[in-house]
Length: 246
Image (cartoon, rainbow, N blue to C red):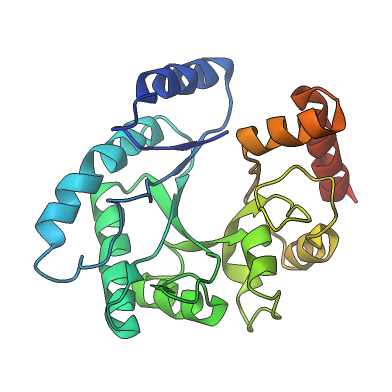
């Protein structure tokens, strides 16, 4: 089970209660660092670092407290820096941020996510080769890659550079609707899951695979098809289980 750690969200108390219930039931937990405005590591290697540490600190500390009871490092999905700053500066900001997370919370394993490319904003994460450079600068044994398969398709599904698949420690699986919306249930076949998962299997992948679907989109699609949202979720879970077992 993966949870986004936005402690300022109005529904955080409910999310925290769900996290504790999942812990009680014995689920393996992973976390996603907050990424919506104002969260963005841009500026972390410069004068803005103190402000960003204070902004991210509560979320990182919360995950670290739970990771302290885990048998192995807990994945923390991270978005790289983005914005209008020079791309080299965004990379340095991302490296500095990941290094700080490791120092502050040794029980977490940051995984830098493949992000969808935008024409009007630079993002560390919208280029697979760049992700390799960033984690190499931090320490590839400490930081992994979160391969978001849907985002990769939106970026054109270019062949992974040498060494990329071996650095993947975390995977987000979702489909893309005919209208181009991602984080959909696995019913359209617009993401080549089989090919991606086979690539991971060939390098002995033993990380976490997350079915990352948008609940609001699931409800919308279920309503269009005259079925229950639970049926779409169950189908997606069964499809992912089949793909992993193939």
